[in-house]
Image (cartoon, rainbow, N blue to C red; front, side):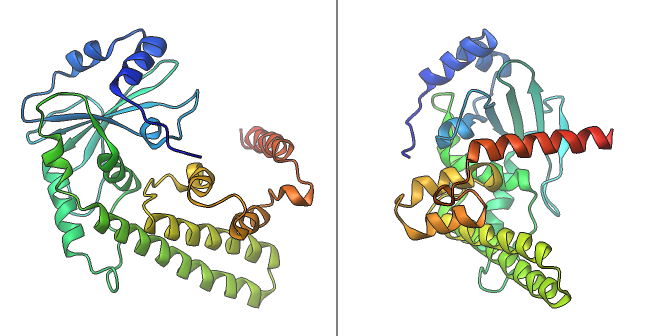
Length: 269
């Protein structure tokens, strides 16, 4: 699966089709200052978008600027981000990011020792933002977007994620051993699957797949990164119980899991 190249023309068409707005309209509403960077990122630029995917915009600003959204915790001693949502057939999200936060991220990565430090100081949304910054597409000419992008070293970010997923895999390994010791083989199998997925995430980050929505896009990243005949792909499908060679219908399994989820939601309410 190859990543599809998208442009601002595609974004303009998306906005017209889903929100009956043009790109010029949306940029005009946000009205970025000359010292601010407005960019597009997310699943559309990752190559993972589908008919239900949102449109994600980010505004990096050196001064305080509220979007009217709810501040999001990012990390200890770090300023919050703020996201607002425009409802519609395709959701339009605008996240305002203080430039000071971006500078702190760059400084954090520069000082990180991936062999010894424990890299869990960031929120999930902050990790996602850093990835999206590295692949983002500026919406305004002559903006400081490339300057802001350069504050984060993509190689160091990959090292951060590699270490993050490695720590998770190591912790889950200990959990599996404890569950086996007590004889809970079902829980042990489920946690062992989680560990296997963390190990895949670690490897994928190492080779540049830094999208942090691992549960949602892990299989797409695997398809893009491995040859279909690679034995580890077959083993992955077997571990997650979607092994086609074993006669398992993934569509039927999806429907059954959705139905079971519906049943549990109804029980809960």
